[in-house]
Image (cartoon, rainbow, N blue to C red; front, side, top):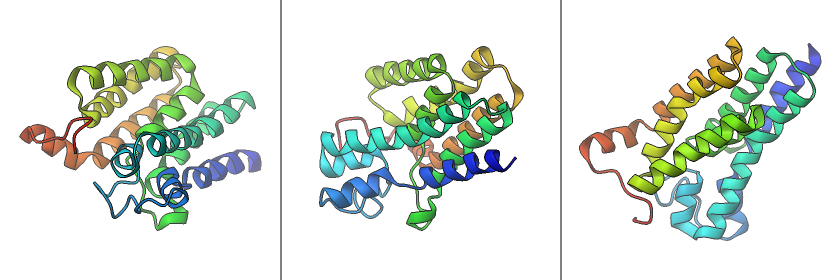
Length: 196
């Protein structure tokens, strides 16, 4: 039980390392919480610092979801622990302990969680994101649709209750964090990839 709690706590603490804020500080860029859209995520870092900074942010955010979940899977943790680890890493990104609980929207970290859980789930979610992004050039819509379908993919490939519940909670939290984007989508005012 102590080892299970260690995995969960470590996942939250790792998730609390904001790749966007750290990358911007190291590269001398504006704080992503106060510049651009105000969101400490890869899309905003792209606006503030270009492709290299965004790629580093995306990689960091993905790894902090991927690493703890994969570690839990490989160490044979029960499904409920794997689910709790994935959710803890995701919550760490949304509400980071080290950065005043002001986190990002969680898309890249969720991708990492799903790749760590099952590469097939991660690959299909990523393919959905890319397909929608290429056709619509709207990042938020790509995230909402791909993550909204994630519980179905988890249920198909890993039909254990705790894992499916984790995916549902992630999808709901991600939709909540994108509520302003959803309103702009409904109003036809959401920005497109490659435009300010």
